[in-house]
Structure formats: C-alpha cells, structure tokens
Image (tube, rainbow, N blue to C red; front, side, top):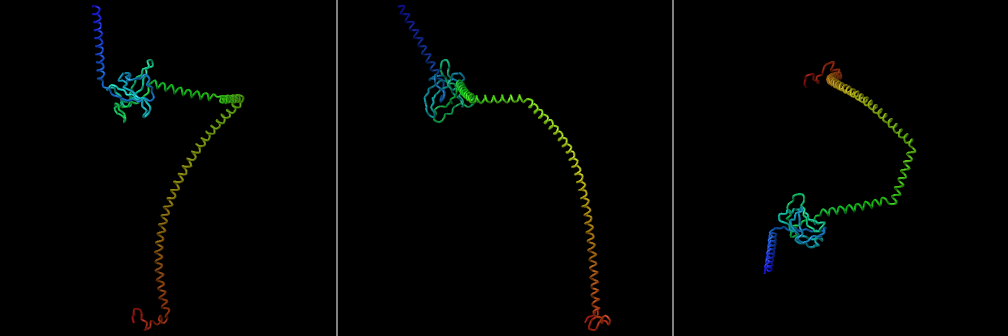
Length: 314
C-alpha cells in the first residue's frame, strides 16, 4: 500500500509539472501573438538560401527583430527566391535598406541581416505596384564582398601571369638577348673611344663658353645701340619742335602778307576806277571836239538859223 501511495504521489507531481509547462508555453505563445509585426518582401537573385528556413531569425545590427514568414520561387520579373519576412513594428526599416543572407561558418545556419543607408531616410512604407508589402532590396554580405574581391584578384593575377608568359616567350627572350648584346657592344665602343668623347665634350664646353661670351658682347652692343637710338630720338624730337615753330612763324608771315596784298588790291581797284572815269571824261571831250571839228563853218561863223544854239528850241 505504501509503494502504491508513493507511485501515486510521483505521478501526481509529474502531471502537475506537465500542466504547468503547458500553461507556461501557452502563456508565452499568447505573449508572442501580442507582438505587432510589419511585413516586407525580399527578392534574392544572387545569394544562396542554404541554411535558411521558415522562422529563421531576421536581425538588424546583430539584434533579432523578426523572422522569416515564408518563401517561394518566382520567374518574373527575373528568376529569384521571393522571401517574406516579418519584423517588429518598432524596427526602423528605412528607404534604401538592403537585406542579405548572413551564414554561420561553423553551424551553417543562416539569418537575414537588414542594413539601413547611412543617411537617415524616411521609413520604408511605399508598396510597389503589383506587390502586397514594401520591397527591401537585395544586398551583399561582407563575406560575399571578400569572395568577390578574391575572385577579381585571382582573375587579375591570371591575366598578369598570362602577360608575363607572353612577355617571356622564346621569341621575346631572343630579342631581349640581342638587345642586351647590342647594349654591351655600344658600351664597349664608348669605353674604347673615351678620349675622343672627352675631347668632344671639351669642344662642346669651349663652344658653349664662346657662345656665352658672344652673347655678352651682343648684349653690350645692344645696350650701346639702345643709348644711341635714344639720343637720336631726342634730337629728332628737338628738330621736330623747331620745324613746328618755323612753320608757325611762316604761317603768321603768310597771313600778314595776305593782308597786305588784300589792302594793295583794294587800293589798286579804287585807283583803276578813278582812272576809268578820267578816261571816260577825256573820251567825251574828244567826241565833242570831233563833232565841232566836223563842221568848220559852224566853228568859225557860229551856228546857222536852222540849227538851234545851245539851250534853244525850234
């Protein structure tokens, strides 16, 4: 009887604990249902979804802010994995945000990481046409960036090796050897003609000195010529001033002479007019005398009866 009583007690305790666990789980589920979520859509075209499943964590800056709701394959507008995620309502998902797959190297489990742009843009709320939720753009993880950089480095290294192989081909090596031989021959020739080269260099140096001296002489001659030209210019300026003064004097004298000639012309005109009057008077007198001499009888006996005398009328 005592053993049965113990079993009954243990069974009752186990049942009570199980009931408490069930009640606690239901309470947690109820609390979880009280959380308000916002839903977003992400199209993954370039990244693998390996290790990702429904209810996988969605994080922002390493903090879990939501979970993966579901996913599906689509072919329009391009072949991709359409992922719908839900995040807490107070999570600041902004315009220009990107989402990428972050995978644990040890466990292989994957999560979705959301990164906002550096500028504080507005919250992402615009729903594109044909979509049910706002769309977050696909980004790239740091591991993908490193892998891409390593891949580009490998490609560049392969190209460099190909170019080195082409540069060091048998034909180019023969050309390089010939070039080195020619350089060696030129070097030997220069060494054997060292004295001639030194003499040529000395000749060039002497010619340079003579050219420098000639330049100095030319400079001095130019300075003297500049002084002479300046002096000639001054003399020419003085001569021009004197010529201007002479012309001014000649102009004044010409004006005086013109005035005198005008006066003489006026006086000559008056005298000529008086002379003309005298000549006309003399001509009248000669005419009268001629008329009288044309009739000598009248001049000796006086005028006849038929001819009226001076001051008479018929």
